[in-house]
Image (cartoon, rainbow, N blue to C red):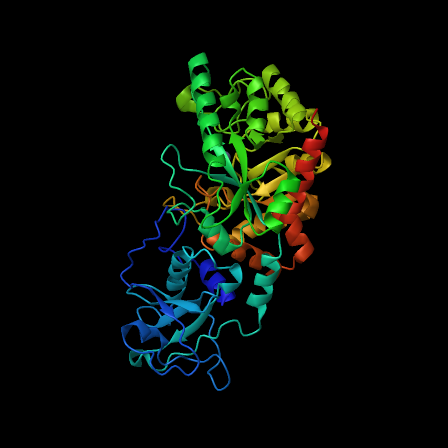
Length: 486
Ligand SMILES: [Zn+2]
């Protein structure tokens, strides 16, 4: 079934239900999906409105018509019902609404079910479809006829998954302990088998003044403290982790892991001491710039509106070089996403530990200033570093003429493939940039993380490669950063 959904996604069939447009996943859908307790075997009393979608089940077994994989048109407006098996004796079901497809319904059910914290990723499949009398003659949707979905889900569930760049809304931050409109909250992580996330204290670029620097520093510190404060026990256990060992034991215990990062060295101002402070507050990396040159470095995208010219320092400034040395000393990973090409190559040479682009893509596939060209990829490989391919539509593929994103999960994995072929599986990882512009049809929020693994597995990556991409490589670099700290 996932492959059917993916096919739809590849064809753009989920447009309108998803994408970069910031479409909110409305909880008040006209179809009123509702929780339907699964009837006990032989339970004759299961009828009425609640049971509408439990009646006339279409078995996926013998005697059924050949399964169809293209659901985009067959079931549109059909009023067909479908359910998602929650894996705990309950089924969340709904009806295909007006103008919608089974794939849309599946997406909505998954989103709703993310509020059920006991779910596991294995539960994610559309297990049944039902045909009301009005649509006689429709073929049967057969769930997972080859067992591929289950195999992929099992591998995904056994993998230590880490998303290395996720923003948080600020200053109004919906509590991620419960279901939110954020693309990443703890219920969505649990539902998608996403075990750990680097949440970002992001500071937008401002004027290079003492006042601007002071304000930026205050904001970064407040955001780090706010992220750390999301640690808790109910309804899901989640822990702040500041070392790779903590991350591994946290996730081994079944808890979700909260990691912290700072985006934009602007927040450092000219005070190198803030780097040690952030590390003490739990940060594991600093993105040296955001968009716009700061006191440390030139950025890949100057901010003309802030008066930036193309080049300010010619790469790293003297302060930026000192900052990288200090990051090495305190054990912060150097993140070169957003920095100018010149600065990135200088940082690769200067840093005593491998540098990482925590959220970027490949310039050979999409010519965008935020992406890394082949020479930059080679430089990452040569220093033992990483590119964490990210799910920002505009970095993956040129947009449609009307400006909307044309990228899908397939494009995302194309960039992963490209980087792996260019510099090897040991130098590539995965990130979403959710809640910071990331999200493509097929991978729209943390609850859909399993789809990324499934696509990689379908393309021939095995469990070992999956583990390296999701966290193994990043843990290696992180350990190197901590070993080198003094
Ligand atoms: Zn960013």
